[in-house]
Image (cartoon, rainbow, N blue to C red):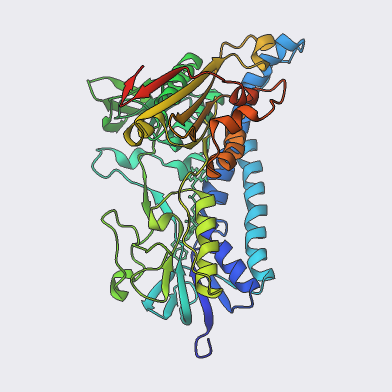
Length: 462
Ligand SMILES: Cc1cc2nc3c(=O)[nH]c(=O)nc-3n(C[C@H](O)[C@H](O)[C@H](O)COP(=O)(O)OP(=O)(O)OC[C@H]3O[C@@H](n4cnc5c(N)ncnc54)[C@H](O)[C@@H]3O)c2cc1C
């Protein structure tokens, strides 16, 4: 649009923002994008990517131990935290450069600056002390860890951001929270040899997942040596003269640890950005309110990703970016589809899941067939590791449609990705049964559970 500096200005260079900027620029649009910290955003710099690298790092002790059953003698292994952090830094810097270069390569202009809205077509770039104008503005500023100012001693606590870059590996850590970030970090620290306690106020970790997976993961983590305290919160954190931390928990127990990490949720980055001044409507949780096409109440201002607090996952932010470009620039209004999203928890063992949990399905369907198998994965026969795998299909008894698929065990995340396709396509249990197994794999169980383990009729297990 002539008259403006840009056709599109994007605020936030994370998963969603970079994708929208790159694709719009590749269409020939004049695009600018501002990032205040590092291109790549949460996922690349302090989320999915470094997290998965640390998961890999933390799995080696089990691999070394398991190797013995296969005839290997592994010499005494040692671990160097600083090497891991430095190698992680190298990798995320490489990705950061690629993200930036991709936008520039498509013809977009990148700014290293915090950006604020001045009016619906004007953005102030604080780092450059200048303003730019744009026809369309996309806010993709993501989120950040929720603080806990009411907790006395909260100033001694760290969040996931800091956990990646600790000066040294703690000997003991307490992690508060029961979501996937808390659970994944508990497994990472434990695997790296840290005495780990997970403290969660709810009745069972991972509240939105299938209860079977939650219970079995809980048991398996405890068997490995991770302490999990449910129905508990910290009342205060105090620094001791020796520099360690005391945490008073519900019930009077005091834990002494080197670090306390809070993973109690995430908040949208929507403050101090001029949104109120421009009149952008917010939700009660402080997220930007958008319609089904990711448009705010102001016609030319859009928002995608974690700042809208819909589904906080990288592929979702990217999908919303693609839909935004279709809608805003290709004359093809496209609403993001948030239904049946496959996802993983990179716990140890891993969770892979797609569709409805049994508890959710019970609320919506009066006749369910549950197919459930637990078994020792083949790799643990010779390793001797006492760890079982769980597979579960939740099926609508009337239509035979597979409503949910839930896996706990090695490579569950990889399997969930593939299961996402038949579930999204609405395939039935008969389609699963007609599918030939791949042998010998763990995944073959998904197509060989012929008889329901039990049924649930009108909420009653029969
Ligand atoms: C520890 C952790 C692990 C995770 N693991 C996974 C996982 O395994 N799988 C998965 O799918 N998702 C995972 N996520 C979630 C995923 O990282 C987010 O859903 C995703 O990054 C959201 O993308 P986004 O574009 O909305 O925001 P972000 O990627 O957060 O990007 C927002 C960017 O905007 C910048 N910004 C903010 N305000 C301004 C401003 N005013 N001006 C300029 N720039 C600004 C920020 O610096 C940031 O770079 C994880 C998150 C965390 C914290």
